[in-house]
Length: 56
Image (tube, rainbow, N blue to C red; front, side, top):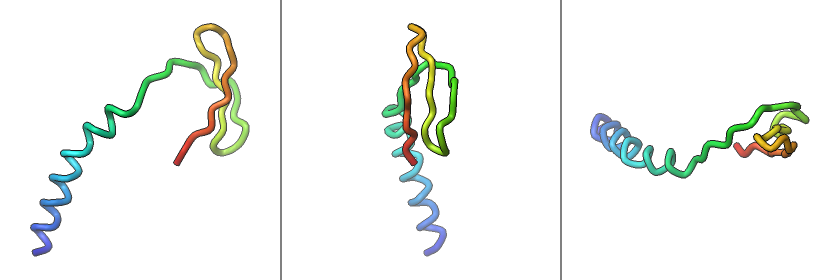
């Protein structure tokens, strides 16, 4: 029974992984400062500073 739960969990993970990866986007920028543990300031291609708060 435990093996069946492991197989089901692995199958669910492999099925849902592409859905999560598709939701993420790439944003090319350079980190110029770190305000605290979850807030950074980045410099984008247009040389604009953008403050980003990380989730999680």
